[in-house]
Length: 264
Length: 340
Image (cartoon, rainbow over all chains, first blue to last red; front, side, top):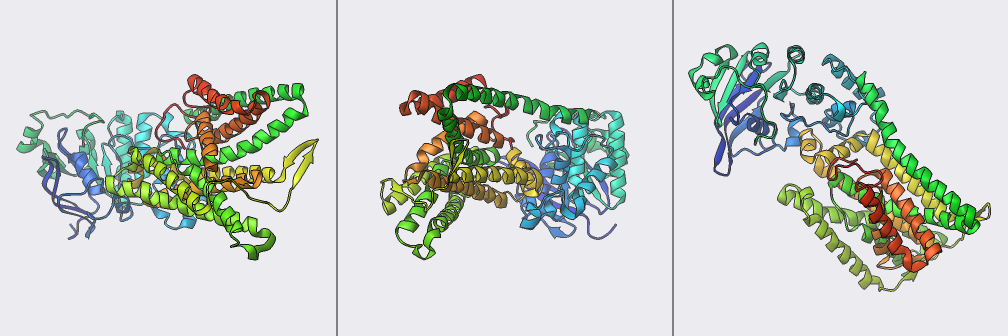
């Protein structure tokens, strides 16, 4: 294992009023790893994603990406240093088309006023659009790129969000329940797609409730419960761990979907 | 496959209603012309020219509503600022060196001052609240502070240049006679400019990263930020466009009608708000249709019912439309976010 992990979460603390939602959490995501972040409802998984991606500031500890401390960077800059994420409840722009949504992921590469105002279709002979279409094809999304996103099935929209997150060229891709709401065939396709992009050197951190998906994709797992880290190790061992079993109240199989409106 | 079907269906559904409404209006106007002859035709032409001014101001309103969910009350005063600054420059002799082109230079400087004023409004209403309270779009405070700016700018101008209406002279009278109708040259210019602005704006919104960023902010500022959109850099762009639209409308009004006063924006501003609501909040095409419709309604109601009837007819029309179609002619039912 290289000395410097891709993501280092070090003694991170976050409080909402009197409620401690991240309590001295530390874990490393090694470079090139496919790691799962699991835990019962309300364990603080999405909160951890929000802290890493900069939705909320942390109250203590340190977060670094590839050796660079990022917890002082505003959210919009973290995407520029190589961190990209999807959302538990789909956050595509319903009034934009499929291709516009995907190309939104490239926005971070547009820095000058000229690149902001130049027609997207003309830039480098439509290279951006071709890249976006290529990614859609790789992900097995077979829809008209110019159709409105709002009319598409849930599973397709979910996959489009993953593709959008990829478009910024991240080093660490964080996916918040990418398989929730997908049927078994779509889940298998997603898993194969993610394995493919991980082979290209991308590091993955995935929040997921579907344990068969986690077992299939992720070799390592961290488990949160009430804001505390209770397991950090191989995915194989997670279901035999005493603390984890206790956290899930003895249930081995966990519900595959979680209420979208859950407080973070 | 299903995706293709969906894309084909949508523009049709979106077009049918405006086309029907447009056809009905054109038919009604044709009947009016058939009965009333050239006099009515002239009224219609004047109405459309006036409507071009309303539509430009309505676009300024609709842009800030559509992207920032913010009813910017400084727009009428920005409109006025262009005319009064231009008048002040000419009549205080600042531009005597420009000779016969002083009027044009004055109007250009007027528009530039207006854009700067719009950025000042952004700095002290929107950005201040955004940085202090997280999300300015969810507060009524920007609205009230923009109302404050309206009064402050208006009275600054009043103190500097007096409250009387003034004449702003254009050194030429370029009327064009076309089948016996008088088309003011300045009016034609204003219509052409308004159409050009719409074309550029539509293009920017649909085909550039900037436009995509604007539409993303319109749908969700938080998500836009997480996707790497620099919201604090894009928001001033909206205010620049707002200042530009209001300023150009003010310049066109000044050229067309020649009258300027510190209160010239109030009348146009309220009509433009009516035009925006009529067309549908946040819809560029709605602002265009609404603006032209209000302009037509105004000149025709003056012709048929006299000058005192204007406000009643225009606002009566507005109420009738929103009772039948609360989202306006081109608006979507979801009032709030994500309309661009």
